[in-house]
Image (cartoon, rainbow, N blue to C red; front, side):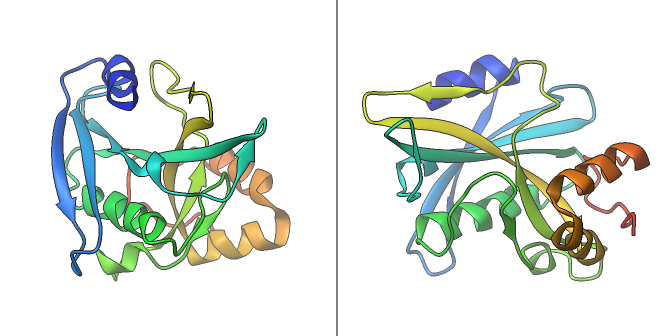
Length: 184
């Protein structure tokens, strides 16, 4: 069901790759779709992370997630970033819910850029919504990786995630550019 939804929403052929953690304790499949939702960006989604316990419920059902993201197609390390978030979830080190911050993930791949952390947000910017998939005992949804800087994280801690999102909209940030400068 997850793969079917990804194929429907990404609207172009997807490539699927298998990734294994450095310690070989976890693996994840990543769907990749170039020029989706438009030319010059690539959409990604995990496949199978929803099978991991998330310790959250929705309507008396287990709430499970897949991670997704969209970035400039010239980026060659976003799939690794997605895998790192997925491996943390698979290994039970983190939970996943909207507006959770995974700290210091980006420096693993790019230590000298402004973006440092991942803010998980409800997906947007696709031509169609990934939505939710409901089964008898679980609800599966997607969370989008949104890179933020240390200063943006500090602003969010002080003012809340909605004020940060509003600041992003006002500054008209390029959400697909992982090399963007911090707005604060």
